[in-house]
Image 1 (cartoon, rainbow, N blue to C red):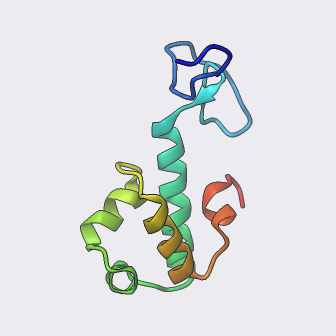
Image 2: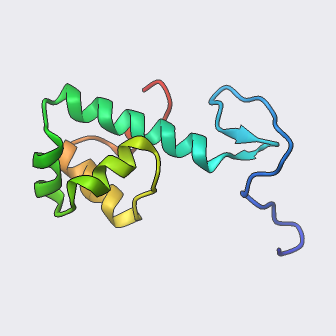
Image 3: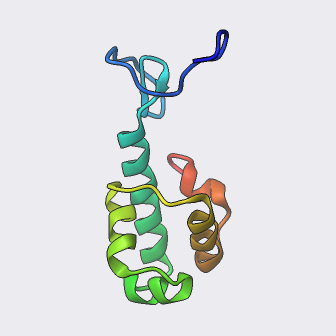
Length: 99
């Protein structure tokens, strides 16, 4: 690690935050992905878009999208961009809690 730079990897010490995705002042990847997946699924269902249709729009398998919605995998930046375009949403809507 570079001196003076903070690592974003979680530590074993648990802290509190308003978003609930921080561990010891750092981002908890598992919690972040579950939150992202929930917002992705909620947005897709609000727009009455099936998993199959979304997968066709962005050129991914349904199983890959299921993994994203369950918070089991994180999409690449490019895939995230395609999802936002297909759902016609701003990236912040999928990234911010409670929005």
